[in-house]
Picture 1 (spheres, rainbow, N blue to C red):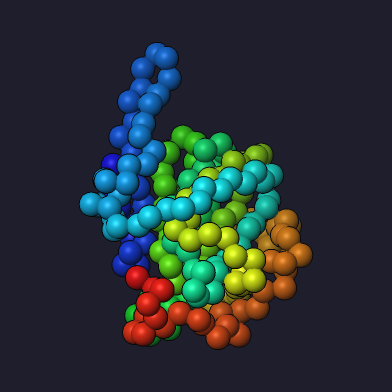
Picture 2: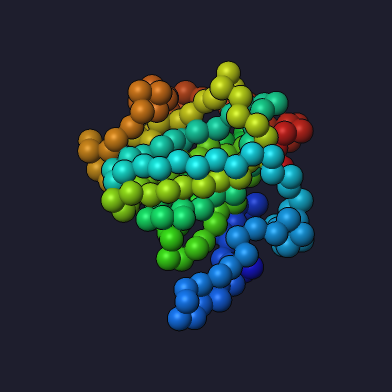
Length: 191
């Protein structure tokens, strides 16, 4: 596994070693030992999968403490633009984001630590998206930031006027409206 650092400490892109031949391909998608050595020790407790059609944007989501989550995400069918936004008060990268294309062809994975809002835009006709979480889903702790927040500087590849969003995602406010529950200096839930 090759670990690619990004402009935000702790947010990394993972590229597996893929073995291909006339039959197809094989790769190890996750090894706790290797992940703990090369990224950081994390105990994932829940795996999720979603299927979405072209034009769907999901996000930007997070869970409030003490139910906050780190995620290891990948697209196993189709293509998505995946985004992580730093929402940790006191962070030198607060409000900045990392965006990466994940696809069934590049086999990349994206690690989104606690203290980040996460979302993705579907670029292919259909995308099947999988992710591991290090904390269980807790609906009462759900929160989010609007994908239309210009202050984030996210270059969504889909016109926002044409994006397909859930009712819940349409109600999210901007980062300026967020009273961030994460403080990098004092929060035990933020790495």
